[in-house]
Structures are given as C-alpha cells and as structure tokens.
Amino acid sequence: PGPLPPCRKSETMTEPFPIDLKKFQEVELDPWKHETLPADLKASIAANVELARDAIVFFTACGSASGYGGHTGGAFDTAPEVCLLRAMFKARPDKFVPIYFDEAGHRVATQYLLSALDGHITPEHLRNYRVGHAGLPGHPELHCTPGVQFSSGRLGQMWPMVNGVAMANPGKIAICLGSDGAQMEGNDSEAARLAVAKNINVKLFIDDNNVTIAGHPQDYLPGYDVQKTLEGHGMTCTNCNGEDLDALYAAMRSMIVADGPRAVIAKRKMCPGIEGVEGECHGHDAIAVAKGVAYLEKRGYTKAVEWLNGPAKKAEKDPQKEYLGTVGSKVGANRAVFGETVVKILAAMPEAERKAKVMCIDSDLEGSTGLKAIHKANPEIFVQSGIMERANFQAAAGWGMHEGRQAIFSTFAAFLEMCVSEITMGRLNYSNVLCHFSHSGVDDMADNTCHFGLNNFYADNGLEEHQASGLYFPADFHQLEKCVNAIFWDQGIRCVFSTRSKLPAILDEAGNAMFGDGYTFVRGKDDIVRKGTVGYVVSFGDALYRALDAVTRLKKEGI
Image 1 (tube, rainbow, N blue to C red):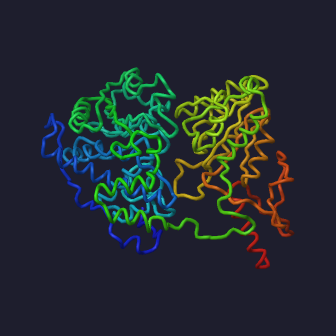
Image 2 (tube, rainbow, N blue to C red; image 1 turned 45 degrees about the horizontal axis):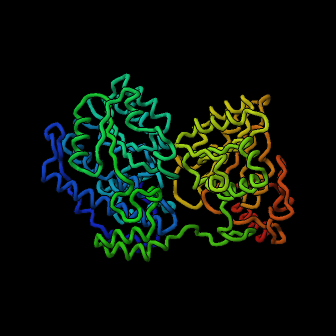
Image 3 (cartoon, rainbow, N blue to C red; image 1 turned 120 degrees about the horizontal axis):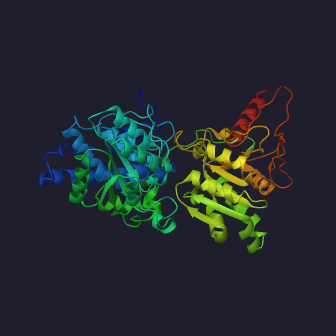
C-alpha cells in the first residue's frame, strides 16, 4: 500500500504520540538455547509488555472517544505472547515464518502497534485508529495498512490458512495467535485434524480469558474446553498462567522446540490489571474513555489523558452535515429495533404458545444484533449459544421444520457467507427461519470486508421450484418495524438486514415520516419516495437516505 491518506486536522499528526515507543527494547531470545527465561531478558520483555499495553489502551481509547469504537482487551491480553515471539523471531529468523498471524481480527491493535514499531506507520497515526479513510480498520487487511502482513477474516478463518503457510515453508515454524472464542468455530476443528494428520509444524498460542462479546463461555457453553477439544483431535497441548512470564515462556518454548503441531493455552482474565474492566465482557470492546483515563493516570501519562479528554473526541465522522429529505442523524438503530419489534409480537402470545412455537438462538452477538431485548423479555424461548453460526442456524432450521413454528437466528451480515450451504439446507427442508443480519454496509465507521456484509444476495440462492427466500433491507426504523410485523409468520427463510449505525428517518414530500403512521409494508411492492418524469433511482437500506439527498439536491438545481 502507498502512503496513508490524511484523515484528521493537521495538528493530529504534529502532536507527539504521548507514549514513547522508542523505549521498546529490541532483544533476542533463542528458545533452543535458553530453557528458562534469563533474568536480564525477562526484565526487558516485561518492560516491553507494559509499554505495549499502555500504548494499546491509549490508542484504542481514542477509538472510544471518537465514537468509532474498536477493541482493547484481546490485544492487551496477548502482549506477553507477542513480545516473547518478537524476541524469538529476532534471535532465530531461520526457524520462523516471522508473521504474527492472528485468528481474532479484533486484536488488530497488535498489528498496528507492530507496524509502528517497525517504522511502517508513525506512532502518531495510531491515534486515528478506526477513523474513516485512515487505513486503520477494525480488522487487519492485506494491502490496506502498511506493515500488516495478512487479512484475518472472521473468527476461526486464520488457522486453516496458517496450516498452508507452514506447509509452504518446510523447516520453519508458522505461528497463530488464537482465542477461546475463535476456537468455537468449526473451521478450527478441521484445521486441527489436518495439522495432526500431516504433522504440520504450526504452533498455536491461545488466549483463554473466558470472555466473549455476550458472556462467559464457562457459563453459556458448559462442557466446552479449549484444551480438551484440541486434545480430542490429537493435538499436543499445555496450559499456563498467561500473566506469569516465566511460566508462559516455559510453555511456549516447550511447544516451539518440539516438532509438529502444538498449542499453548494461556489462562488469564480479560484485561488483567485494568480496574473496572478486568474479567468483564466490555473489556472485549474499545475501553471506555473514563476507564482508559484512570489507567493512564496511574501510569503517569498526563499528555495521553489530556488527548483523550480533548482532541480525541473531535474526530470528524461524516463531512456532510445534512441529508435532505430526512430528519435526525441518529433517530433509530434498526439492529436494536428488530429485537424490540419481535418482543412486541411475542408479548401478544400466551407464554405456553410462545414456548411451543418460537425459538430464538444467538451466536454470541445478542447485544450487537438486537436479540438482547428478546433474551431479557422472553428467556423461556431464548438459546444463548457460542460463536458457531453454521450449527446455530441449522438448529434454528431444525426447529422451524415443523409446521406452525418459527425460529429466529441472528448474526453479522458478513457471516452470512459462512452459512450459505446451511441456508440451502434449511430451504430444502422448508424450514421457517427469520434471520436478522446486522452490520450490513459500511456506514458510520471504518471497518473492512471481513466484518461487514457485502454479499447479502448469497442468501437468495434457491431455484424456482424451491421455497422463496425473502431479502428485506428496510431504510429506517419505521420501515423495519412495519416489515418485521408483516413477515414474522411467513413461511420459509426470510432475511432482514440492518446497519451498525443509526439511520435518519425518511420523510415524504410533505415532511412527514414516509414509513410512519399510515404506511403498510407490502411484500414485493416498490415504494415511490419521490415522483419524477425523466427516469428512476432504485435504492434500499442505508443507501436510500443518501440517494434521496442526491435526488433532492439535483432537483433544486433543475436536474
């Protein structure tokens, strides 16, 4: 990739990065030479871990302050593994493929920090974490950010590729940073079986912090154990306290010097040492400004605190301040309204009928896709499951095979691609499944194709003789509510799409809510938003308010 584009006011780039990354000590650690961690190297690596964690807290908190979001916990957690690996890569470049492959793309802060340490980007630029057009999206992508050496894809997508990297580099070790969340995905089980069967020299270092987006796996997925799962596939594993540098090095070394596939499961709490965040689910996301400020104040970073309390909150999002034909830039979050609408539908049913007819299954995203409202209001029909989209969809399809029953399934729209075969299976079995795919499109924040749905039409992949699969992408929260009410009891697979960001309400020519009171959603019928005589502009979803603005402005110009 070429130079990063400018993305904020010029003073952003001239103000020095408040955490001096020049203090990072480039040391060499040869695991074939040192059975234990030498005291001098331990002191240097421990200092590097602290510096890395301080930097990660700061620039991910910038994402929180600006409103773009992001993720702190995973990158913060794995700093010890990364710092140890960096020292090993430097000592023995002949032994490693020196890439920090990571199957948890939300730990991208690690990759950006490494890019800054290696001189590919300036430390100052880290403050633009997740800002639009800054080249620092929410997940690593090849040819997007200087220094980034891979695209992470979704959870569970990386390890199978790292198997191939190891196969392409005989005599060298390929590493993959893992997580207890990513290990829930079926791809990892397949990767483990291949690695063991072919004795692929791949090493996994798995952060097992018992935290995912929506809960604690030990609570909502009892029986799931990362080490036992891998050992069941024949993988040699060891576990250790990830916060004990000596124990972590001993475990990593024992797996590295041995031939073939090996895994280290590093046990720790999420965000160890961060007051109010340690062990909590919200540690997965970008650290709240107040929590970040408290942490950095204790660490003596006055300038970092000043930045978070001031300039960090001034990041410009949408340069266009007004969209004609709409009202309110943040009047309704469709992804949340989906759950609220379903709750109202269920409230009209007796509890016994609800339990007999409806099942709602989550894939660890209930807070992000609107299902949290259903969980809270109707726990009797809610299934809290893990990061297992394909199996969860098929469970929903199995429930919905029975006449008169409706299953509800939800995940991010990007993950729809992972479920195409399962959707076909559900269609062939005439299953009734109402799917909600949120985070479709790229509005509001800088992220990339691994986490935003670009291939929504893949869901409509049946033939004429098969049951129809309706795809619905409402333009605002009014239309979404009317749409869900209209299609809830329809038969077959129905897919409702929504954005991550809130959307403005669409207005008619009289200035009233286009899809508000008096509007009826009719399947397969176009809604005329504005009349004209020259041609047609066809739009839907979050593109509609932008298209309407363009049409309105052009009309004012006489076009």
